[in-house]
Length: 419
Image 1 (cartoon, rainbow, N blue to C red):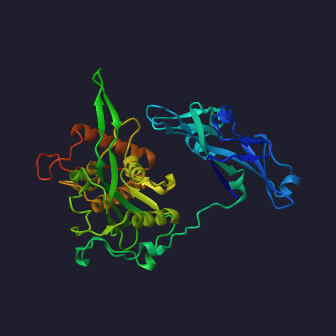
Image 2: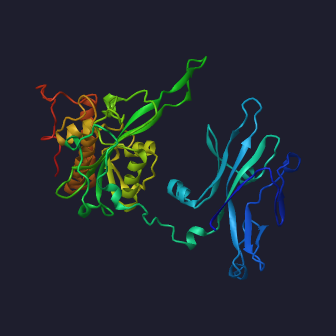
Image 3: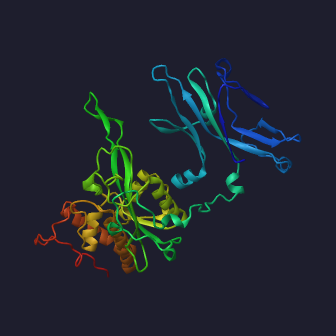
């Protein structure tokens, strides 16, 4: 057993060394044990006892099958007579996060609630006063579980999720297809490139109020929902050809299709009238999850934000984001449209956005970046970026009309000089 969840109900739960009694008069000053020792007795009963947090088991105890479980989450109910109260969480965040973010080997308890996340002392996570803070859930994890067992993902999702599937849209026809599914011989391998772009719609508008001092306070942020996800082949004879172009069906009311920025129009997500390849969110998630677990590298523009809204975690070494490739420290981020005009002589996103076009363009920009890096190394790339920013400031970061005839056209033929 690797994880133990304990939900405090109306019953009395007794264990060796401590007692939980959910009656208010007895719970007022209970300290929850930070570590438990568990073992099977000779009579095949489960024995549970308190254990000093910093101590390890002896070799003899381990040989007898004893295990230690450390408290990693507590969820208390904070009482409030006016609102009925709310739940908060105390979570012990492990070394992996702190090593990645801060470069230190460290574990820390954090408080999570509706308004903030802040570090707390471990005693705050394990001490309760039922006058205002009642324990609801406790979560224990087996100590050293990750080092003793291979927890790597074995990719339980089959490659078949990428093969042809029927659209939910009644009016969708093969003649309207905007993508070609992968053949079995094309299945992605670790390290393969995949161009990706996502488009979103707004389900709920932001709710805000104006304070007396004139500043705005956000009561409820706007809620975005993924509406279209496109993946294009990143290499091979069909490079740039989409193999996923899913419109995500939603039963929730869309308050803003953001058509100018998303290309999504009213009716595109409605199975009754849409002519798009309409899928469920789960179906598209499975495809992305398969690609992530396979180890492909996603190329796109602004992918960090896209994956955050999509609600998928992708390792940094699997993401190639052109918004950062063509960025100088302490300078503004540059739009995909301007980069495409400057480097590729392409005029994209004229009236609206198209995720196939955006995914292909990001892929081409990555190829251009590799070309620049091979041609002159880091110093030359820096010179090119400096020229890019100078041109951008001169044009106020607006792409000139291609037929303007004013000498402001794409500088593709003159801007890049590699020594």
